[in-house]
Image 1 (cartoon, rainbow, N blue to C red):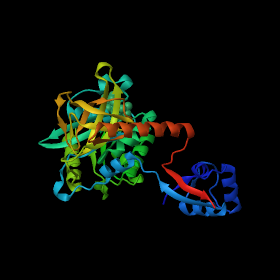
Image 2 (cartoon, helix red, strand yellow; image 1 turned 90 degrees about the horizontal axis):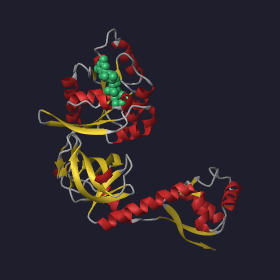
Image 3 (spheres, rainbow, N blue to C red; image 1 turned 45 degrees about the horizontal axis):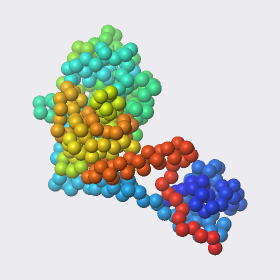
Image 4 (tube, protein in one colour; image 1 turned 180 degrees about the vertical axis):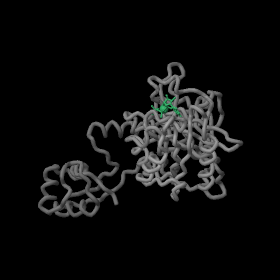
Length: 376
Ligand code: GTP
Ligand code: MG
């Protein structure tokens, strides 16, 4: 099924939008509300017939479509797959302790340095628990960052829903629950700030149940781990719970292929140029690789650990890494792909840059056009 807009129909057929809409109305076709409304193939053909036009609906194949979808669609045979670390995202209401939990787990203190204690950056770190790795992504909890947080859920295998015991489920907690559910990932609850006096645990468990997250201790399937990020309570239990969920889900990837994954954040850093934080989801990324990510492209000039900034020469599945070498800062949430040829990468990046400027000019986005139409 190839949908197209009324505008692209009119452009391709060389008749005015008014005439297309008028014809649709005469035919009693619903949906002709405005020029950006979509026509399905059947309606498009019916309208064309009514206007005595012959049309052929064709997807316009671009280099991007063919190369990138080949990479995305290529199945990795079972024999190529090896276990990979789970990618775990902290989600939850502002100030409920997402950054503090991650700080405790990796033994640094980012919270202290944050302006107003509000996370403005997405961070990703890999930690090692007795040889078993977990990749953590911390997302900003402020309402202005809803969109970034939604993207945060997309790189995620498991969501840790952080709920402060003194506050309970708040608007952004509920939002986080729907993001995690939309992403279809398992949810582990960290009932945080358990060290505070007079917390009513039953109240929170009841709220969770009301949001279809029934705690395992109440016969449901959601693990609720009591934590205190300030005291370090429940940290081992949280890690063990995550590793158990990961084992059940058997996350795997093929390290022996071109890398692909997601950009979680990027910025222009003076002399260093563009620094992009990427999470590799499949394959292995190496220094020297050609990358395309949204409308940015380049060759990996250097890679550094997100944890201690140590240089890295390669990053396998589930590894977060800071990458230098992009020509411009790719957007958070954009997927990246490794290609074998810088010319192709440039071409794809340019096509995308052009498409997005067209899109913002016209307010429409369609990859489909009418071709070979002729008046009868
Ligand atoms: P945003 O990034 O703004 O969404 O906040 P956040 O969820 O990352 O919360 P953050 O880790 O910045 O913690 C907010 C405040 O709660 C800080 O002052 C922490 O010190 C405090 N806090 C975090 N965890 C605990 C805890 O377990 N117990 C107590 N008592 N305080 C905590
Ligand atoms: Mg934070």
